[in-house]
Structures are given as structure tokens and as C-alpha cells.
Length: 636
Image (tube, rainbow, N blue to C red; front, side, top):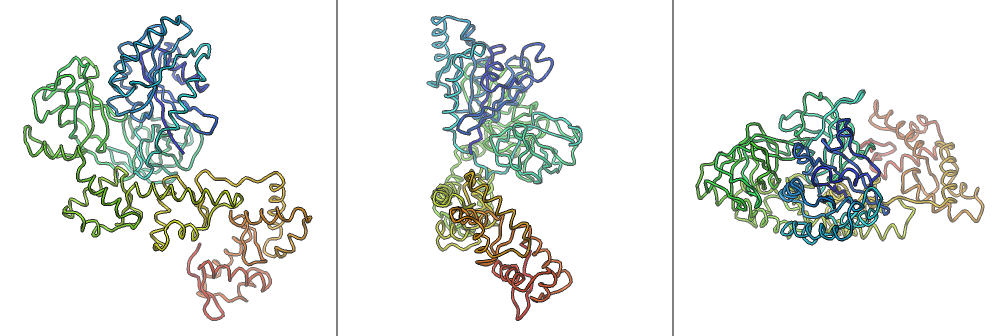
């Protein structure tokens, strides 16, 4: 499922908040001061639901110049930009600055919305449209849609919603295999829950109960609870607005700009090597040793700029630079950032991080500049990735990879780690790797196989693991195949139910008649407990014209795990099966072996039912028969 964040951008009082409310029904100004002054000060959040089930989050950012730092805190996780221009005023200073910022942050897609259409005539509107088209030339918004709307009358809102749906549906799925990373833009306490932080999950997926680390402090914590759009979820994915209840931390332990990340997945440093860009419309020349404010994620840090190959960086130019911070920063190679002049505050440039934990460099050193050029081009990493793609799904070990490269072990480990951190490769088994492209191709093939299976078996919870392994991998060792299927599950493309797999969004849908039969069957087997009638006798209690549906429903309940088929004629409700298993486990707490007679007496049933349970556990490799007794191998 796609998880996309749409961000507003534009000058103060150009109607961004009213536009979001017209699209979603949600008024994002939450502070009394915002409501009183009629401008957005803090970030506001809403969700836009489309008729086909697609959903996008919307970040409504402040437009006033004094609140640019709040705008930057929300812009880091944006996938699509909705540049808002009031039809009665046209482009204004913060419109230009916001457009510069979202361009520097690497946003590649979006559209332009002309608001307050009801306040101007058609001739004026066309003039503003032409001005907007001219102003965005040379940016990522060149030739993008320009729509005119009125949030007051609703005119054009449906067309805008349809255009946003098209843009959202075209967005590529995010790579959930990257370790999760959440820049914190709000921190607060909730009575009875403790400390809660919010942000846009920019990478990976977070799971309830998972260990986490606060950066740059390094404080360890655990994800106690997750919410997306106000609803509890077990997993949150990159591209979603997330509220996280963190265990063991007080509100005073955290500040806006901190990062919640998978332990050990980000490095903390006081320096960054970067490709630095001075904006073409900047009014400043960036001097070597200039003091600037660095904006990264939701963090703001005082920074000194060291130009590595020149003394001045003029508007429209870029160069390699080292940024030296007064406080530590947690970042990753490839992250985008923005810099603003120290005094007076104005956006002057930004760029991309090439090394998130470099050594201190001297200026004008050819070897340093050449190393940065290699890091920027990613040549070694690209070569390694290509070799990984050629290995396919064989999960090569490091020694196999090294045999095809001239890199030494230390350099290879460094490049493998870099590819892991950026999600270009995964490590399904310890020390064995696979390229993301291979996983994507496997995912497409797996979805095709499961899609066909669901068409033929709409009441089955999914395809048996052994059957899927055979169709998808053909001869691969089971551990490797299961590890790759696990990666596809983590990527959100498929889901696992016991020993079956299904598409991530697949659900069994019963007809009304089948639902009634399902309830009757479940009620009967639950009431029958550990001594039910045979499956054949149970089916015989239903009218002849219902038995075909009954068999289909029974089959679905078996695949879904609500009923357990111990033998062709003995079926248990899952609660009865659990009861029988617990009797086995209790016996093994004090004994090494269990006989049929001992189990029969422990369960309080006949030999027939006791034998069915034990033989089922034998076939599931939970127990192993030794003579006339069984030994416990594992708890399922």
C-alpha cells in the first residue's frame, strides 16, 4: 500500500489551511494563537481519503516568514508539494522561499493551486496562472498542473482532489527494508501513557514493542504504542504521519529535532561533508568560515561552512564543503538539508550529505576532493550493487561477492554497510545479501502467484508455504527461501498466516449465507470441545442444499486456523486444540516422554481423540515418536 505525504507551501494568508479543510474536512490550526491570529504557526496535519482506498497525509506548513523553521521541520518528509498561490496576490516573497526550500530538499513532484478564485475575474486569473507558470520554470514544478479553486465556494475542489489522486497513485512504493527513522517535530505527555512524539516516518517501518534509540543522545527506549491518523496500529510505514509512545523516557529527555531510529542505524557527528548549493536567487555570497543555520529533518543547528576548493560560493554555484556544527547531528548519507543566513535570517542554499561522519579536512587538498567526487558519484557502491543484482536470489556470502571485486575486505564491508543503510540491499540471513531490485522482482512474481491463487481459492486464508516456495524458488534451500519470503512480508507486499501466505491486502469475504454457516460451524466445534462428532457427521446435520457451501466454509476455516483438522474425520476448534496442547506441555514439564495412555488420561478423553492429537503433533514436528511414547521437540 502506498504511503504518501502531501505538503503545502506558500506565502502567509494565501489560503493553505482553508484549502486543506476543503479537501479533507479537517481544520489543522490547533493552537489558540493560530485561531486568533488567522495564521498557521505550528505544523498541522490531516489525511485525505480517496474513494478507491488510497490515502495520503497532508502537512500544512506555516507561511509567515517568522515561522520558516517550523515550515522546514515539516518539509523533510514530503513526497508531493502543493504550492499555494492566492489568485488575488500572485507570487510573494515566502512563495519564492518555500519553492526554493522544497527544491533543495529534493522533492520531485507536485502541482500549483491558485486559491481564492472567487475573488478575481477570469482575465486576472489567467494572468496569475501565466505568472505562476513563468515563475516555476527550471524547477520541479515546471509543466506541472496549475488548478484554480475556491475553498469558500468549493469550486474546483473535486478537480483538485482527482488530480492529487492521480499524483499519489503514481508515487513509487517506499523501501520499508531500510532501518526506520523518524525526525521528531512534536513532543508532549499524555496522562496515563507518558511521553509521545510525532513526526513523518521517512524510512523503514516501526513495529509496536520494537526497540528504538533516541539520537543524537543515544538514549535507549521501546515503542510502546503507535498511532497513524489517530488510530492504533501495530506497524507504521515510511510516508506516514506517526505518533509514537516511547517507554522509559520523560518529555524533558527529548527535544524537537531529535531522531527516533533503529538502534545502531545512524551515526552521530559534529561534521558533515556535503555538496553545497547557493541558490540562484540568493542575495548572499557564502564566504569560507561563514556562520549559518543548518536545517536537517526537524533539527536546527548553528554551523560553520568550510569551503574545500574556494574562498567564496556565489549565487547559482555549488561546491564541496565541510559543515562543522556546535552540537551533534544524527544523519545519513544522501540526506538533503537547507541553510539559512545567520543574521538576518534568510534561506540562501542547501544540498546533500556525502559523508555523515567525516574526518576534519584541510582545504584545497586534491585527494579530499577526489574522494568526495567518488562518494557523490557512488561509483564503488553502484558497481557492488550491480554485482549483487547479478547474483539474483542466491543470497551470496561476503566471500562470494569479494571474489568478483578488487575491493579489500574493509572497503567491501564499508560499501555493504552503506548499501544496507540506504536499502539498496538487504540481509535476509546473517552475512548473506540480496539486491533490492531482486527483491522487487521476486515480490512482483510472488504477488502474481498469490493473486492467481486467491482468484481460484477466494475462501482460503492463503497459499501453503511449501507450495509457494516450490513455485517461486524451485529447489532453493528452505532457510533461504523462508528468509526471502520474510523480507517480502517486512516490505508490506505479502502477509503470513501460520504456514500460509497471502497478498498484504487480501481478506476472506463470505456471502451472508456462508457467514451464517461459518458461525454455526464454529459454535458447534467450540461447544463440542475435545470430543466432536466426525466431520462427515457434522456435515450431515445440514440440509443437502447447504453442504457444498459448508465444505467450502470448513476449508476456509481450516486454512485460516479457526479450526484444526487433526485427521480426515476429526476436527478441533482452535481453543480445544490449544487446550490439548497445554495438556501435553504440562506433562513435559516433569517428564521426558509421554505415552498415549498418559495423554488420554491427562486430557480426559478417549483413545481415538488422544491419538489424533498426538499424530497431528508428530506430523507438525512438535513431538517425535520413540517406541510407544513421544518426546517433545519444540513448542509451536
